[in-house]
Length: 397
Image (tube, rainbow, N blue to C red; front, side, top):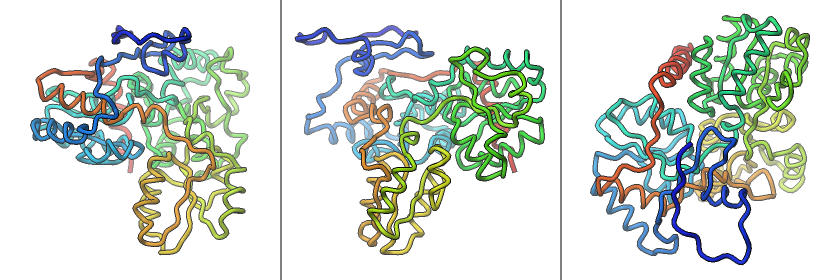
């Protein structure tokens, strides 16, 4: 657990609760694998010179810095990204730039970990705000997954199980996957990863997103919902009997994306009623009933390419993070493409939005002054086994 350092708070009329302090980034969650450290004094978000300051610091650093921007980042941050993409693409882009001493990852914690795993020892990965975590990744801790494996062992099925972990997982979970003969997957290659896994064993433990696992198994591979069971780490034995574990093909971890999990069947029905002829396009992290009701389903990159290829005048409701949807709507508006957010309620990824312009300015200016801040560093043993799981994914046909 990292120490927490903050400036003294101003006088408040009420005593802030521990949850409020956590959300403000002023405390650490004792139940989390990772602590939260605040960087200290940030520039004011109302500072009119922030853009100029970021540009000046980046220019001073030159080729020493490489800024990665995930698709879900704010526009104010994306404008300074050298490359944009999903988490795995960005990690590979970082590894392809060995001359960059500093990799500034504008994303969330697990993404920066993946970049550190794939880059050289000479490169330093920096996350502008250490409070930028991922609720899905934090739904599976190393201790919980180790306990799950003990449950599978006691049920007599562990030797039949191959773990497949989504890219949206911590380095510890990736390392567990590597140690137990499994592979990592992305939302683009989940089907190929599962096909590979079923060639190695009879069952799959899919971590940590239940929806991607279920949708891939049922929608893409023709399994039934009865082939899937849900392991709940907060219940004894995962809430499952030994017989249920023996009968299952897919053992799904009870985790989900807080953004994609909010879309509902009602969202789909409502947008179809409001916008006649609309095409519903959703991410496979959405609930199974949402995916089943959609017209198109695919990864973030798939969504972007589908809209690029869409005819002028077409109408689209997109079920993914709002920053990306809004950016795509603005991009394709001149082509007459109507693009709306699937849900009527606005929902950004709150942890992605922790990376704002003040944090980016503070990071770049610190690096330009020779001060290394907020470094993300994975220990050697964890890196070794996590990289093994990633390499198995890269070897998929």
